[in-house]
Length: 180
Image 1 (cartoon, rainbow, N blue to C red):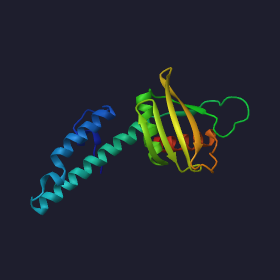
Image 2 (image 1 turned 90 degrees about the vertical axis):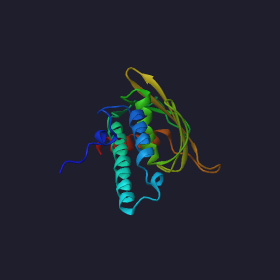
Image 3 (image 1 turned 90 degrees about the horizontal axis):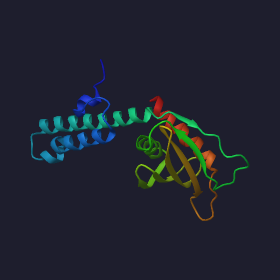
Image 4 (image 1 turned 180 degrees about the vertical axis):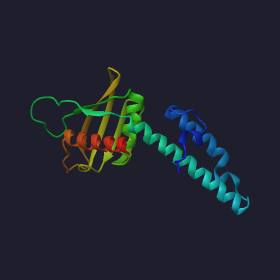
Protein backbone atom coordinates (compact mmCIF):
# COMPACT_ATOMS: atom_id res chain seq x y z
CA UNK A 1 0.00 0.00 0.00
CA UNK A 2 1.34 3.44 -0.94
CA UNK A 3 1.78 5.86 1.97
CA UNK A 4 -0.53 8.86 1.87
CA UNK A 5 0.77 11.95 0.08
CA UNK A 6 1.46 14.59 2.74
CA UNK A 7 0.91 17.42 0.26
CA UNK A 8 -2.52 16.04 -0.62
CA UNK A 9 -3.45 15.61 3.06
CA UNK A 10 -2.64 19.29 3.66
CA UNK A 11 -4.41 20.28 0.43
CA UNK A 12 -1.46 22.16 -1.07
CA UNK A 13 0.61 21.65 -4.24
CA UNK A 14 3.66 19.38 -3.93
CA UNK A 15 6.81 21.41 -3.38
CA UNK A 16 5.06 24.25 -1.55
CA UNK A 17 7.18 26.12 0.97
CA UNK A 18 7.38 25.14 4.63
CA UNK A 19 5.50 28.32 5.50
CA UNK A 20 2.64 27.27 3.19
CA UNK A 21 2.62 23.75 4.69
CA UNK A 22 2.51 25.13 8.23
CA UNK A 23 -0.25 27.58 7.30
CA UNK A 24 -2.27 24.73 5.77
CA UNK A 25 -1.82 22.68 8.94
CA UNK A 26 -3.04 25.62 11.07
CA UNK A 27 -6.11 26.05 8.84
CA UNK A 28 -6.92 22.36 9.09
CA UNK A 29 -6.33 22.32 12.86
CA UNK A 30 -8.92 25.08 13.30
CA UNK A 31 -11.42 22.87 11.50
CA UNK A 32 -10.45 19.37 12.63
CA UNK A 33 -8.91 19.56 16.09
CA UNK A 34 -11.00 17.45 18.52
CA UNK A 35 -10.89 20.20 21.16
CA UNK A 36 -12.89 22.43 18.81
CA UNK A 37 -15.65 19.82 18.61
CA UNK A 38 -16.23 18.89 22.25
CA UNK A 39 -19.59 17.33 22.92
CA UNK A 40 -19.71 15.41 19.65
CA UNK A 41 -20.37 11.64 19.65
CA UNK A 42 -17.32 9.48 20.52
CA UNK A 43 -17.11 8.00 17.01
CA UNK A 44 -16.99 11.47 15.46
CA UNK A 45 -14.39 12.59 18.04
CA UNK A 46 -12.25 9.55 17.16
CA UNK A 47 -12.50 10.33 13.43
CA UNK A 48 -11.51 13.98 14.00
CA UNK A 49 -8.60 12.86 16.16
CA UNK A 50 -7.40 10.42 13.47
CA UNK A 51 -7.65 13.10 10.77
CA UNK A 52 -5.76 15.58 12.96
CA UNK A 53 -3.05 12.97 13.56
CA UNK A 54 -2.75 12.48 9.79
CA UNK A 55 -2.43 16.24 9.28
CA UNK A 56 0.30 16.50 11.93
CA UNK A 57 2.14 13.52 10.41
CA UNK A 58 1.90 15.09 6.94
CA UNK A 59 3.53 18.29 8.19
CA UNK A 60 6.27 16.27 9.90
CA UNK A 61 6.87 14.36 6.64
CA UNK A 62 7.10 17.60 4.66
CA UNK A 63 9.53 19.09 7.19
CA UNK A 64 11.66 15.96 6.87
CA UNK A 65 11.59 16.25 3.06
CA UNK A 66 12.80 19.85 3.32
CA UNK A 67 15.57 18.82 5.71
CA UNK A 68 16.55 15.97 3.39
CA UNK A 69 17.28 18.51 0.69
CA UNK A 70 19.99 20.06 2.87
CA UNK A 71 23.16 19.00 1.14
CA UNK A 72 25.84 19.55 3.75
CA UNK A 73 29.55 19.61 3.20
CA UNK A 74 32.21 20.82 5.64
CA UNK A 75 34.22 23.90 4.76
CA UNK A 76 37.92 23.76 5.52
CA UNK A 77 38.54 25.29 8.95
CA UNK A 78 40.96 28.15 9.36
CA UNK A 79 44.56 26.96 9.55
CA UNK A 80 46.24 26.67 12.92
CA UNK A 81 45.39 25.01 16.21
CA UNK A 82 41.83 25.32 17.40
CA UNK A 83 41.06 26.50 20.88
CA UNK A 84 37.72 26.10 22.67
CA UNK A 85 35.60 29.12 21.80
CA UNK A 86 37.10 29.62 18.31
CA UNK A 87 34.37 29.72 15.63
CA UNK A 88 34.20 27.12 12.88
CA UNK A 89 32.15 27.06 9.66
CA UNK A 90 30.43 24.71 7.26
CA UNK A 91 28.27 25.19 4.21
CA UNK A 92 24.74 24.11 3.41
CA UNK A 93 23.65 24.10 -0.22
CA UNK A 94 20.39 25.87 0.59
CA UNK A 95 19.47 29.53 0.84
CA UNK A 96 19.38 30.83 4.43
CA UNK A 97 15.61 30.36 4.90
CA UNK A 98 15.74 26.65 3.98
CA UNK A 99 19.11 26.15 5.72
CA UNK A 100 17.63 27.70 8.86
CA UNK A 101 14.71 25.24 8.75
CA UNK A 102 17.06 22.27 8.31
CA UNK A 103 19.32 23.45 11.15
CA UNK A 104 16.28 24.07 13.35
CA UNK A 105 15.15 20.47 12.85
CA UNK A 106 18.66 19.11 13.43
CA UNK A 107 19.16 21.20 16.57
CA UNK A 108 15.76 20.15 17.90
CA UNK A 109 17.06 16.58 18.09
CA UNK A 110 20.31 17.58 19.79
CA UNK A 111 19.19 19.89 22.59
CA UNK A 112 17.10 22.99 23.24
CA UNK A 113 16.54 25.96 20.96
CA UNK A 114 16.91 29.14 23.00
CA UNK A 115 16.75 32.02 20.51
CA UNK A 116 15.78 32.27 16.87
CA UNK A 117 16.09 35.19 14.50
CA UNK A 118 14.95 33.56 11.28
CA UNK A 119 16.71 33.04 8.92
CA UNK A 120 20.09 34.19 10.18
CA UNK A 121 20.55 33.16 13.83
CA UNK A 122 19.95 30.17 16.09
CA UNK A 123 21.11 30.03 19.70
CA UNK A 124 21.08 26.58 21.25
CA UNK A 125 21.83 24.55 24.31
CA UNK A 126 23.32 21.31 22.97
CA UNK A 127 23.88 18.10 24.90
CA UNK A 128 26.26 16.66 22.28
CA UNK A 129 29.22 16.35 21.90
CA UNK A 130 29.15 17.67 25.48
CA UNK A 131 26.81 20.21 27.12
CA UNK A 132 27.40 23.68 25.68
CA UNK A 133 25.77 26.84 24.44
CA UNK A 134 26.05 27.37 20.71
CA UNK A 135 25.33 30.22 18.30
CA UNK A 136 24.75 29.43 14.62
CA UNK A 137 24.97 32.41 12.27
CA UNK A 138 23.87 31.93 8.66
CA UNK A 139 25.21 34.04 5.79
CA UNK A 140 24.12 33.74 2.14
CA UNK A 141 26.93 32.50 -0.10
CA UNK A 142 26.68 31.67 -3.83
CA UNK A 143 23.28 29.95 -3.81
CA UNK A 144 23.83 28.37 -0.40
CA UNK A 145 24.64 29.37 3.15
CA UNK A 146 27.76 29.50 5.27
CA UNK A 147 27.07 28.60 8.90
CA UNK A 148 29.42 29.96 11.54
CA UNK A 149 29.41 28.04 14.81
CA UNK A 150 30.45 29.74 18.07
CA UNK A 151 30.54 27.56 21.20
CA UNK A 152 30.62 28.42 24.89
CA UNK A 153 30.60 26.37 28.10
CA UNK A 154 27.28 25.26 29.56
CA UNK A 155 28.31 26.10 33.13
CA UNK A 156 30.72 28.63 34.59
CA UNK A 157 33.15 25.90 35.63
CA UNK A 158 32.62 23.64 32.61
CA UNK A 159 34.63 23.55 29.42
CA UNK A 160 33.06 23.92 26.02
CA UNK A 161 33.76 21.41 23.27
CA UNK A 162 35.62 22.72 20.26
CA UNK A 163 33.53 24.33 17.53
CA UNK A 164 34.74 21.67 15.09
CA UNK A 165 33.36 18.94 17.38
CA UNK A 166 29.98 20.71 17.40
CA UNK A 167 30.13 21.12 13.60
CA UNK A 168 30.77 17.39 13.28
CA UNK A 169 27.67 16.59 15.36
CA UNK A 170 25.48 19.12 13.50
CA UNK A 171 26.61 17.90 10.07
CA UNK A 172 26.00 14.27 11.09
CA UNK A 173 22.48 15.16 12.31
CA UNK A 174 21.72 17.09 9.09
CA UNK A 175 22.94 14.17 7.01
CA UNK A 176 20.87 11.75 9.11
CA UNK A 177 17.78 13.90 8.42
CA UNK A 178 18.66 13.88 4.72
CA UNK A 179 18.69 10.08 4.58
CA UNK A 180 15.39 9.53 6.42
